[in-house]
Length: 186
Image (tube, rainbow, N blue to C red):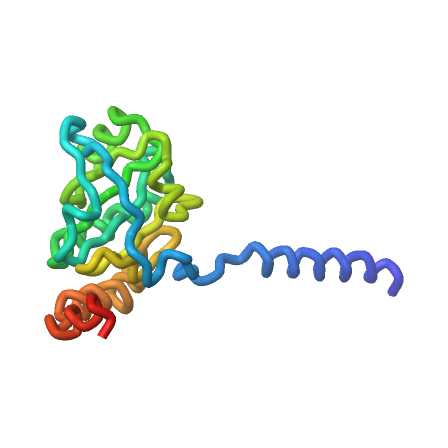
């Protein structure tokens, strides 16, 4: 019996460790939810002389997907983003995070480009403003420029089907009166 005690303790330790390291919900709370998307002005990946800001996107629902060519999980979610870009009305914008411009461009050429535009965040400062601590991460921003959702990790077919698409449809179909009331605080 005494020789089983160390083994039982070791197994219990491994179970606790596994539970502690197990992925939690991919829909982590974010201090940005319900607040205006952080302001930025970044060059486009494929047109460095052009910039884009969240103010340019006001009046439409949009998705911001944080990705990088060096990110293995980004490759995992990429086919789902490609499908989403073909089927959803909502535009997807990329935020190329801490990457090389040539590497990122080559990656999109090789795997396909699901983004309306991809923004180039070479030093990761915009990612920091959005609270990004790993890629991929995906944000849903409403017509008023308010962050409505943050998803950490690669998108899955199940998440897109059961949560993301219904959320996007609801935001796209939000009545004009509700938008006006929420903008005026009434």
